[in-house]
Length: 135
Image (cartoon, rainbow, N blue to C red):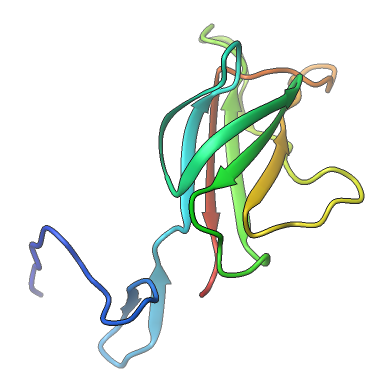
């Protein structure tokens, strides 16, 4: 067992680095994009990677715009949200996806948040998303 301590890992090609075991079998890749943002009032990104902006398009509806297009539209998106700062409020999986009749795109993802009780659209104070896909 050894430890590698580096400040930067750089691929020898334009593709992202891939993690492999000793026999060369791929074991994983880095996420393609992630974001943590405030979805109430003036929408603001707290932190993230490969997300250029968030557009508020209605109550509980947001467009996540990527800095660099994802390599394909077969990505996985996982999300969670907290509706408000009250510790008793619901924290958990958020309904998300593209609107009916819209296609998944490599440059933008449309998500929506709904209140835990009642299921109506609601803005959330803490929203997190990660996006993963193969090159």
